[in-house]
Image (cartoon, rainbow, N blue to C red; front, side, top):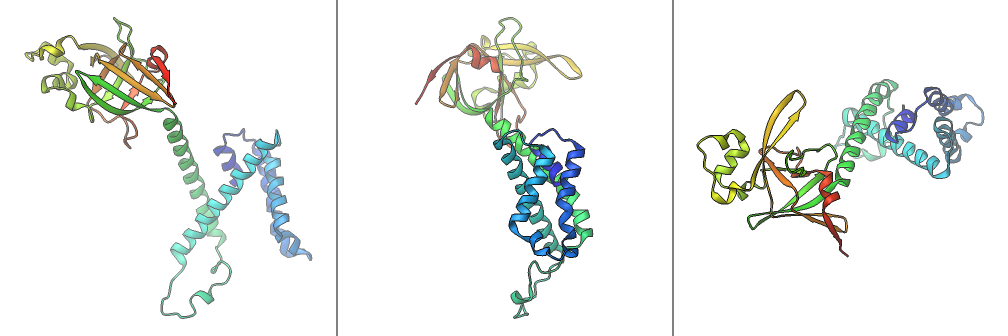
Length: 290
């Protein structure tokens, strides 16, 4: 299971037969008590040699960096899961007795032995917990690699936001072919009067007795869009004065886009406030900054 989890975390091609034989090699240490020269089995060099052989059999040797990445991940997961099992064991079974003056001296090695039943039950739970945790970390890492600083300016008001560059956002204005940047109203509601906010809530307010302030009449566009299971939906979008996007050491600036404001939280953990159409970066002029 440790070899299998290593392959899953590193996105290696897993061959069950190789994983099985790699694990089989690692299990030969259980025969140590029946061998006269058992000390060899418990020496650090022998343990390292066995783990090297296990990883080699399970994943092969394409190049040195590939192999050491596999070996390092294998050791990391072994220590992490082993430490978790020991921690859980003492959490549920070890009793601290403050009245016992010999408390510390009564513990030998790891104290109470961890039963095989505990390992058999606890290991699969930690396996799936670890896999799920690493998957979430990877998702967060991918998202953070696509997070950028965004500055939007509308009617001489400016707001600093955090944006996610998302290739899944393919929203365009069908008339002008301008890409649409989707923005949460959570941090930007102060830009707008209540009449405009009502339009963001319900586009059909435009056709009701809801007169917009004159400075907003020519700034609002209606964008049709669709989501899974629903067609013919409408969004209200605003033409900004300027949008500045900072990516690493580059600054992108443009006003050839529309901002669609929605009354929703785009990120459950508040990592970003807007979703950026990738074409916005492609069509914007940029400058290098030191």
